[in-house]
Length: 344
Ligand SMILES: NC(=O)c1ccc[n+]([C@@H]2O[C@H](COP(=O)([O-])OP(=O)(O)OC[C@H]3O[C@@H](n4cnc5c(N)ncnc54)[C@H](OP(=O)(O)O)[C@@H]3O)[C@@H](O)[C@H]2O)c1
View: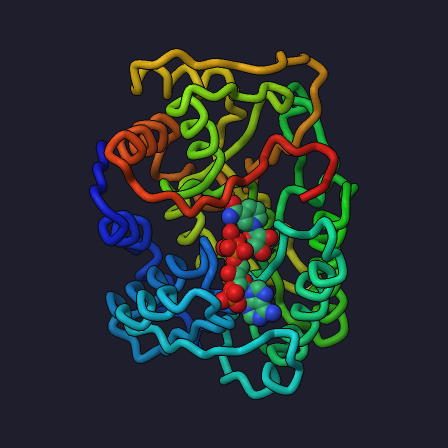
């Protein structure tokens, strides 16, 4: 597949285009869909895909997007797609209790960056907000976003962390996301709520993501850090489709599902691919240690369920390079995938 997107509208259109199997799934899904924590990097395009799938399935289902909408443009973009935006602070228990009924909840709210120095707010966002939502939606199915950072660091030769590995969260961000999982698990056991813990490692948009981080460095002639020598990533459009399809997997006690792409990709190789496309040399700092341990997410179970992602790594690299070379926008939000002390 060769995809070329020229601007943000085309990018979001491509990313949020629902597949035929998603439209079929949504056609048979009972109840409305609420996307909670919808104004962030993933939620906006997820709301768009859900709404487009509902329209294509010709169902009367409502799609709600719940967030504070700190960024008002997020609200405008999803309302254009027919999504009903609801401004709500998820830490306000009374406000959450009044949210509309929805049999299907996709939970994305979270806090990562800025944790150092405001650990309390990260813990509140990552555990109290889930508690409020789990209580409000105790009769719903909930796909609860989580992260591969709940696992311990691991080496590339291990093949990456799998769902049965015990969590070993480093640092307060990762610990609080494990707290988020435990809160959903607690309410799932208490109320019988069906939940899927959706452990994602690195969605790729062209405006942010691991590839954008590496490409920006190469483009600017800055050194690429090799201390975390490998990573996994997946096209965000594939993440969105897998999110909605995961409603079918929800169970009590919760099901855990790793979500990423199939490669354990080398940072050096990736920088080299960008260097070729930009016609500039890649510069590095540090060196790969074979025993280096980082976050690596083995998503084999998800491929058995959903198949491989539709956009390949080299396609993502081509698109990212083209986007940067033509001055494409950035969210200015690096992933900090190279961090291994758990401090964000
Ligand atoms: N992006 C990735 O590659 C990645 C990788 C691993 C895990 N994840 C997980 O996936 C989830 C979604 O990722 P993302 O990148 O879209 O995160 P994000 O950009 O941080 O978006 C989360 C959104 O949640 C909303 N929110 C936070 N606190 C809230 C509150 N008190 N009340 C209402 N809304 C609140 C915020 O929007 P408002 O300010 O408008 O409320 C925010 O934009 C995160 O929880 C993260 O743990 C993402």
